[in-house]
Length: 385
Image (cartoon, rainbow, N blue to C red):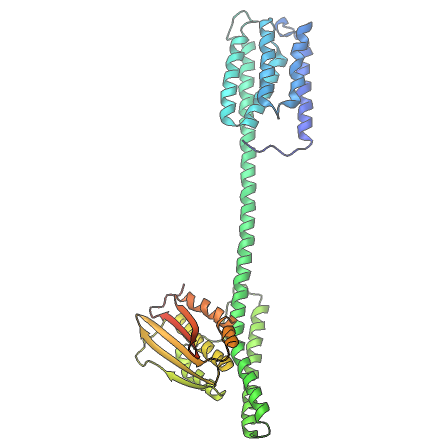
């Protein structure tokens, strides 16, 4: 059943017009006596006017009342224009308010009753033009009611579709914002977290060695200065990305370094004071560019965590190929249990899991005795999703 139209001035105005039309047809002095109701029959002819304001809420009841008045007047020998016009107005309301199926059945029965009853005051002439015109008027009113209902349903459907489209755009915008926030957080961690940890550890070395080993303190301060410049450059690139007006600007803040840069990465950590043992498989296959970069990030994250959370400043990096995948393992002596917990659940490993999942890989982390183990499996065939 179609939804009712919103209230407004049109509904009361329509009721007034319907009442006036029925009353005018009831009291008008038609030349043909067959159309004139007099005496108490005039009261019967005016009853449909009183029912008109209720045709929206009770269309079937109002149609039945109007039809009953028209049939009663027909048996009294009066072809009542007011009753038949009221029947047409009620037929419009029935089809408009109760739908096409109910409207067709009701209006069909109504037109059949009107067709046969109108012949009574016309001496049995079923095809008298004066009677047929009212049958056509009722059918036309029903057709207009169906058209009105269809138009209202169409407008309602278009409005609902537009609202759904607007909600879809808002959800898509929220999703894009969330994805962009994750990407920025991941890039920020990749380009800053390692250097900050190097600065922090070398600051500790410099403060403890300042008086006893000044040359060691100078080396640490040089490392801090170099790492600070790198951090400033990386943060500047991040700010430039955030302030970019190009919506399609998805540049990375660092070049896509792969495992070819693993030796240089290990060297940097060794210079920062972390003893790294690299066990690389000389026959490991070449990865896709995306998987190769993710493998490099795995090594970077593992060594950074070993540098920050490790117990004795050492780590082992193993690369081996098995079952069509590259296994990259970083093992370092674990610190206290509380540090190990933060080690497992940090933002770096969370972002790393997202990157590894993007190339259909798997990440496993946990304690193995007194050591913390980061085990990452990356398929050799690539295929980033």
